[in-house]
Image 1: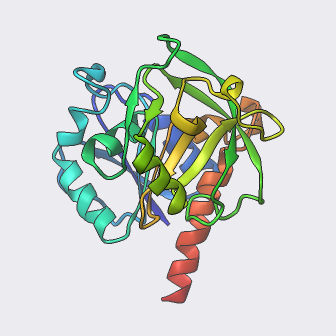
Image 2: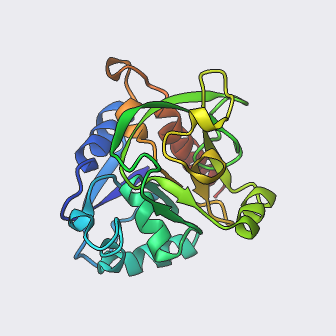
Length: 235
């Protein structure tokens, strides 16, 4: 399968993601500069982490208006898989492809450490190879990762099973003490109603080989590959 990774001025996890997809999973990967207006035969597009445009105005705000983003919207509307990681998640919210917003961490400080996340929805193209009730150890690195959504829309997320990941402890317990940034309902990642656009604050590309202390992030990429292969096989 073929991945496209969109690169912005200030992206800093683009090469990490490229390395994992190219060298660990042996996939075809293309970098797409944000000023381009076409994707390259992508099965999945990834918006990587970093500080696009230096987080000027708001993280992801300026990047959401880059020329390639109109093509990304069309790609998502056609059912193409889109994964936004950290700053990429912020972009998806700014573009309106996902609901809610991200605010300053309740600690008001940058947080960079491993956390545990519980997989709430195993039936997505991004989580289908993860065992039921599995807990993943994946790092976060952000200052604006405090996910907010109003109560009415939160109920809608829950009703539609759009909450994919929640911050938890090693045993899968979700409490205020396992919430690193103050996110509503411990939310670490959500998906759109159609199930093809995922945004998450943790960095799976930083935890896809055991040399990094955890390879739990590989399940996200494994799932994307497995779901894409299954769809191609049906065709």
